[in-house]
Amino acid sequence: MIARQQVGLATCTLGEVKNRADLVIFWGCNPRESHQRHQARYSASVKGQFIPEGRKGRRIVAIDVRPTSTTAAADQFIQVEPGSTFETATLLRALVAGKRIGIEEDAKVGGVPLHVWRELAEAIKAADYGVILFGLGVTHDRGHDLNVEELGALIREVNDYTRFYGLPMRGHGNVTGSNQVMGWQTGYPIAVNFNRGYPRYNPGEFSVLGLLAREEVDAAIIIATDPGAHLPGDSVAALQAIPTIYLEPHVNTTTGWATVVIPVAPAGVAAEGTFYRMDNVPLRVRKLVDSPFPSDEEVLRSIKETILHA
Amino acid sequence: MSGITGLLVTVRSGRQGMEMMKGKFSDAYLEEIASLRINADDLAELALSEGDHARIVSPFGEVVVTCHAGDVPRGLFFLPLGPVANQLFSGAHTDGTGVPRWKRQPVTIEPADGPGPEPSSRASQRG
Image (cartoon, rainbow over all chains, first blue to last red; front, side, top):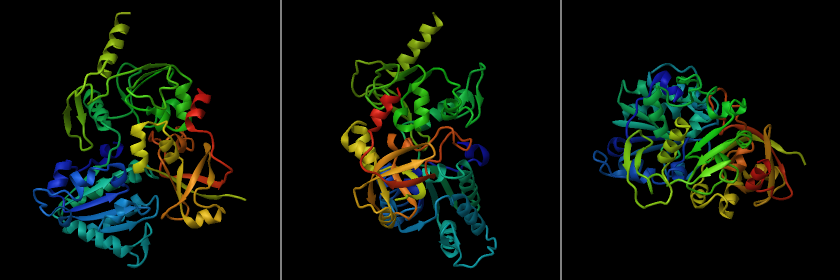
């Protein structure tokens, strides 16, 4: 998010990946474990309009710090040193632009010989339609958003030669939806603070973890996430020390300690709504079964009206 | 004996993702999120064997995990995302981004006698 605000991101939908991409680079991600239907539906074996041969019509490159089932199924595995995304993306920018690199061809960058990066840069320029699918190995390592900035700059510059796009491998259902809705309601996609009566934005300072670490929060409403399983231990302890209202359809590692747990209908199963896919495509989801419990929206509306009329 | 140092990398595993959907208190989920993938030479340096227990210590906490030798680089230790790994990170250290370095936490690993307390019981003790 922060990187996209700095350099933008030339991106595409998963439908375009399926129908057009003849070069797919998985960078710092392992979809065979984390997004198990991704390759079959969009990015590897699937046949597309302009990729009629499916897997045979695509060159697949995997960049990771360790061998995985994704790297094993790729045409080429580039095993890099941890924390080298910024450095290697910068090198690729220079190679794509034809700059002179002042080191020997066998000298290593990010643990990989220069000639391997040179061959990758040539493959990128030779592709008809390339895409980098990047994961947490890029975003959650040293450099964080600066790694994505450099990848975004590389992707933009490759478009001088061919069609080339980047797509983050978002996790958790509808995480993109919260970015979208906050974006069109406040102008900011994450870390929005309303405590002065108008939206303010500052990742880090107004992110959940920062607010909890500085003990600036004295009550919390938690919706559609399980902080007991997903936040660092000290952040969970900070939440446990304040009153919490928790909207959740399942028993999990947060329901045991939340002050109030309100059971809700599972979204997309017993409550209809709009779901944003990882490529920012909104999809309408229908209610499949009835639930004795209200939806998240009904509970929030009820709390809001009760407060307004108190 | 003394431990070895390296970088802890949290990862998704297919089993962790599947068992999470069935329930986060199942034996299979709790077993998977405490399963460490470590280079065989690192395991030997710790004088440990496949299935032995080890204690991982970071500046923010410590956990006991079960070791499995894997095809991973020396000095990099891979643990599935979840309440066990989370004890080794801090929400106060995010480089100003709001997100910890989930892929790069310096840790020390040393042999341990047996499994530690389950994460759920630790959580209820704190609460």
